[in-house]
Figure 1: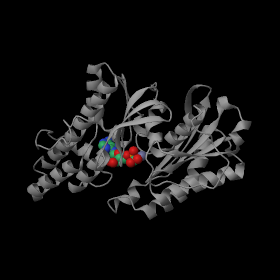
Figure 2: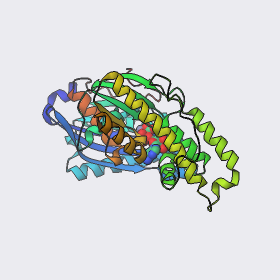
Figure 3: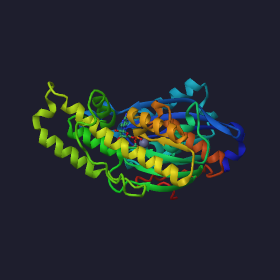
Figure 4: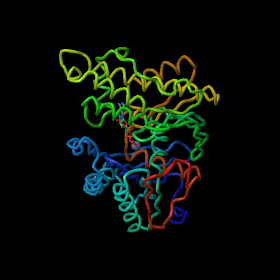
Length: 357
Ligand code: KG4
Ligand code: ZN
């Protein structure tokens, strides 16, 4: 492990930097022997307000804002955890997938800090960060488990045997669940980010008001498809016209509730099928859509009925954050899956399927 050889493996300090999209996250995680590593401090700056004016993420603005935020956030977590920068043993950063320019900020800063300290660096897969984020919760899961990974760009069911052992059981053949939330919200004039906006709007709606498709619900495999649902939402918004926005009707809330119900039903059904076919008794949900209350309620019910344990990340750690990056790095080193390195010639991987080098 080069630089890390010199340190006490039972209490290694990992600084994690996340900058793949529109949140700058920094965190400190410490290993504790073979136990689950613990989160010492984390800080997050969300760019949502800045991008709202454009209705979505503007990559160049995202990169520039990461540059502004990353060092003050680093100073903040070190202060909160009462550590000097020199105490950090490994500097971890999100290597991909994500926006190239945004990723380069985190990678560049992590490698520069590491080089100045003579400490090793480790590039982390963003989705592995999400996948392992439930280990940051009060009730961490145990391996093996089925994982439902539902982020803005990915929807996958996986068999997870251990850190680094991820077998994809099924995934989306077009849009991700997060994309279905975001695109439907946009069509309804609900703004960005669409998931939370749509789910808020759905709260007082009737989920049976509009008949929307449940794509691939009975396909017999574990793949997903959400593009047809988005088209059905588009058709409904066109049919409703101005009536969609009429405050004297519940049209918008009804359409939001019906859309959410369609997405959630497919996610729950396929997750339960994955548990049945693998024979596993534990489900782990990760990624931004995992914050959705309707999804959590229905998964809880289905898992209770099936006698399956279900684990989620803490609500505030469902969307992008630095804690999951520091945690994934710590768990990879702790499990012997990966060694941090003192080679500071970094690259980033904007497109990077999980499970490939
Ligand atoms: O995991 P994430 O923060 O970023 C990616 O790695 O993509 O996920 C972002 C996605 C977005 O599509 C967002 O609309 C969705 O998660 N999301 C939600 C909720 N909170 C975030 N979708 C539904 N309900 C929510 N409460
Ligand atoms: Zn993410």
